[in-house]
Amino acid sequence: MPDPEPATILAAAREAIETEAAGVLAVAEHLDESFVQTVELLAGCTGKVFVTGSGTSGAVARRMAHLLSVCGTPAVYAQPMDALHGSMGAIVEGDILIAISHGGESNEVNELARRVRARTVPIVSLTSAPESTLAQLGDITVVLSDEDVDPGGVIAMGSTLMVAVWGDALAYVLMRRSRYGWEQVLETHPAGAVGQIAELPDSLPSLSGTGAAHPEE
Image (cartoon, rainbow, N blue to C red; front, side, top):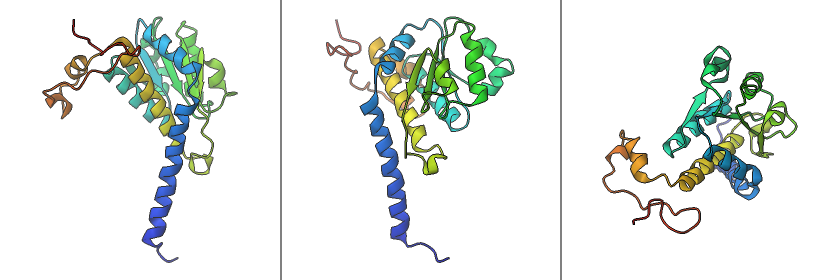
């Protein structure tokens, strides 16, 4: 088989990127009351937010937990199989579990959700399958419809980005809602280029539109 022409390679790459970009934009269009409910649940959390998932969902869960923490909502990634081998003891009343599964039928994720729910820990389920086991386990169920964004409907590419951007929006909105400022962000991020920032960025506007995240008195 002859090597493909450069133009053919670039066309295939652009097609993949455009497909995934359309999926990300669709998240903004389909945000609903479940997002608002999740914001209010996490804003009232008296413990920590645990985020769990397996495979590519695990990768995006780890990223979501990191960004929530950076933005002022204490969060930890919980590897679901490790949790079922004892570390779920860290998840207690007052905490919240965000459970991510594309198809909603990952046994280890669902079993973890069942067990922590029995400890009165609220579950936020993120899935593309509204009739799945995970969807039924959620106190709040977020359905991100992701038709035609993954190659063959099998390899979680575009669907992973959709969950990631939903999590980004969650972290950002919570940061603005709690008035978590850049001083606090930089205090917990002393390493890397971010740690070298000498001048604070402009404060984020409050959600009410009445002022900055830390208005001057």
